[in-house]
Length: 135
Image 1: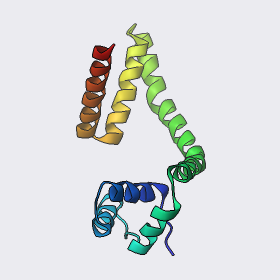
Image 2: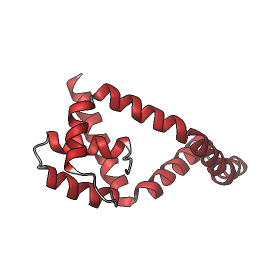
Image 3: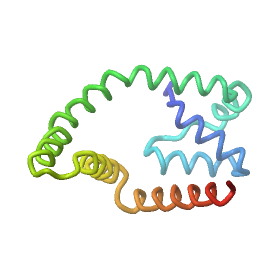
């Protein structure tokens, strides 16, 4: 029996909650996660047995398991990417903090892709501006 990640379960429950049929949810899982989707029966069971608290615990546990791998990759990226950028900026008497943040943003953009990065930044700015106007 195939086990599905908490992300797949969360996606299935969110899509169902938004009004989609189980068939539509299955199709969405196949497309988004590039995997064979769970059976309708399995998803119905998730709907009955999984609440937000249980799903949150599952996501935290999955993150905890992935932490050593993420930590090692992050340290390697910093050693190979960020630290040389900071030294070059310091040697050139440039703004070290600015260069560090620019490196970080370029890293995020490479992970997300340019289109998503721009969309997320635009949404962040829009929400920030709305919050400022409310104050």
